[in-house]
Image (tube, rainbow, N blue to C red; front, side):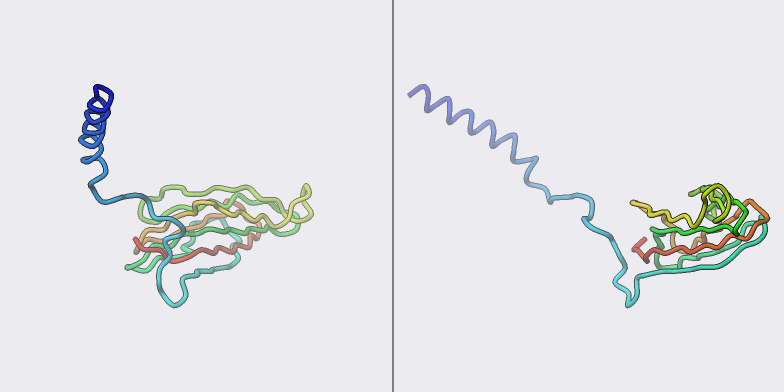
Length: 147
């Protein structure tokens, strides 16, 4: 009889401790990508720069963030470059890379696939500076996301 009353007391204590912990709604981070439900959530931009200056390459709309997930850079045949990305609103550097031209030290196009991406907040812009006088081609892709 003592065993049953002890088990009963133990069950009551476990229930009393577990009730406040388990009674609230479950919370957790979203699973998968939090992509906009727009008709085309994919974003792509490309271009060529030939001087060392900050250039706005991508602007997020006022209602959505953009997450850049892939970057491709290539320098002209014998040059090198140091592409740097920053947010226009804070001038915070969010990416810095070094690339070689195709005939320079075994260089060629450099593809960077980012696992978490570079988030551009709604209404903000991403700026690029190649930090060289060589020609540098760039291509950025990503998706629209909820702010």
